[in-house]
Length: 391
Figure 1 (cartoon, helix red, strand yellow):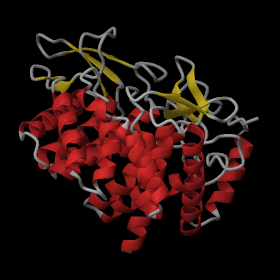
Figure 2: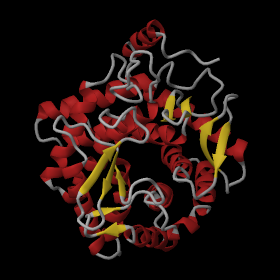
Figure 3: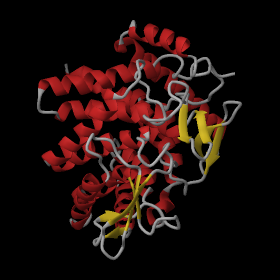
Figure 4: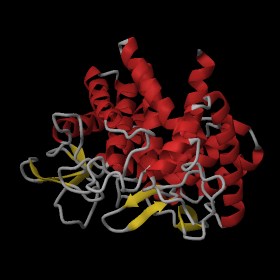
């Protein structure tokens, strides 16, 4: 049985232990554990048309198909592990599960084609550039661009929902596909679309304190905002932790491509809110304003996304004090993720991290392992190593 995360004494004890350990030791240990878990997952699934998504009560993986928004994270994690180990096992496995996503380059029914294609093909192209991979990425970017509405200035997130034109904060993550395509042979207008989307989201999704709304409904005639709601958070005016992490990551990435100071400032506002609302062990509750805190589930996916983003943000902040704030926050989050009860070592989970939350209001994927938490955790570990090597 899993440890109950409502037990604050257990959490604080684990946090104290983690604080006494150095990341120079914790990170290689966590990466080796990740290697073990990913290798086991490849053997468990075998069928490369199936993609791991979340764990079942017995710890085994529940799988999904390539059309699911999470499909790119498993091959992406395998590519990252190959980058770390240079083990041909992970290259072969990454190629197999990446190939299964090929058809999604034409999937115009979702904004998440960025997650699907760029996390798989993009991570494969970086160490092994090929025209085949490049062409899939470029086509996926063209497909995603068909969801852009110039009147609104945003790419549409969902179809067939209660909003006429919904745009969610997660959508910032899929912009990386378009940025990359614009710089690698795709149409230059793709960058204009991305910047307009980022500007519109910056204007409408953020509150004055740097927190974010999850989903906005736009009027397709006037382009004005009709509604500001949640979907996976606690309430419309609460702050869904993973959405806040997407905002940090998305605007940090946008600054990387544009060097536009407005986007850097937006990333920092989102980061400052996130950091200032973390509990003592630095792993956020699934919603920062959930009513049952401290007896609410934690979300390691939000923590992993934020840690990875904060390592990058620490390189761009102008003031040394800001650089230190973001680097230290990323480090402290990572320390906790590398330790019990969040590292899945010693549990029945076949994943790397435990205690993630998918959609608590829908009672879906609550306090389980989820593949995108593993993906961004692995990325954060590698980003830490890269920064440590440059010191």
